[in-house]
Image 1 (cartoon, rainbow, N blue to C red):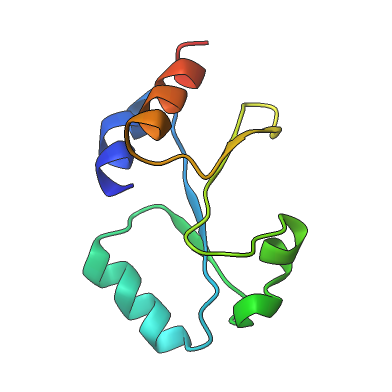
Image 2: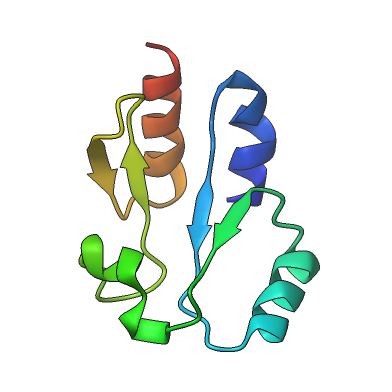
Length: 92
């Protein structure tokens, strides 16, 4: 995700990380250690995280690709498939 963000952020890619952590200090430490510069949110409620419930997250990591209107257009893509979908959406 870091490489994709670096490559495509200037072209319009935004990432919002939703954490299922319970410990704020460990969560923030991991963000800094991994160099994750995008927006992060968490209610520190583990599997009771309201956003995770809203999107029916049952395993992590989970990815949701939203188009410019906020509609989920792909889910749980990885690697080349994820990059291709991002390129496709940013080309529109």
